[in-house]
Length: 219
Image 1 (cartoon, one colour):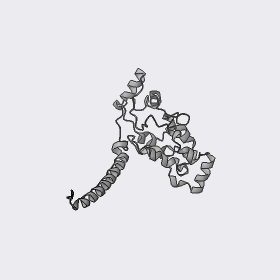
Image 2 (image 1 turned 180 degrees about the horizontal axis):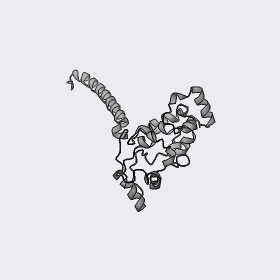
Image 3 (image 1 turned 30 degrees about the horizontal axis):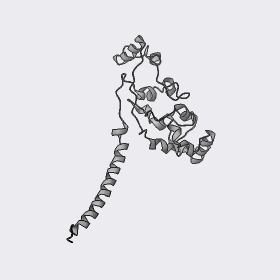
Image 4 (image 1 turned 90 degrees about the vertical axis):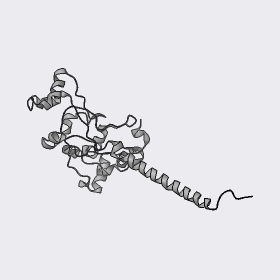
């Protein structure tokens, strides 16, 4: 019986299989990089806000504590957004006639909230509680970055599951004394490994198995 395929077809078949494996690997690598890129995670994206509010000025220059505006950060799942009255506590005297503050003045006159554009937006299937993280020694800058240096707030981290798990697998590496929670200049290297271990015991951190359990964040 006549041979249907030329002997060279064997080499073509082998080369094709190698090409499929290599191409598949390249596609997978490209996907992992794109999935982590700011294009999909919105990392470093400055969102336009109805008021030109600068954390750099209010926090960095004026030294206003995070809790003055985000009043429920220690007691609730949400850190809370300040009502217009909080802004007016100062701005009924300071820069009261500035056109930049007209949205604030209008909100106060009409008793309507300012519609801020959310920057850190977790998907609905992910549960996050600010108060428990604060109670366990996780500082604001650990997740939000150097807010005191941001004229316009942007998302510092990816907020992807692998980023959350990097902390939940080794929480002692990211905790700090509760007195330093709102210190934007705090560095992870400010404590020794032994001090972190002692803090973990003091805060009664849960086991790695429980912290990485699916039901901890997906409820």
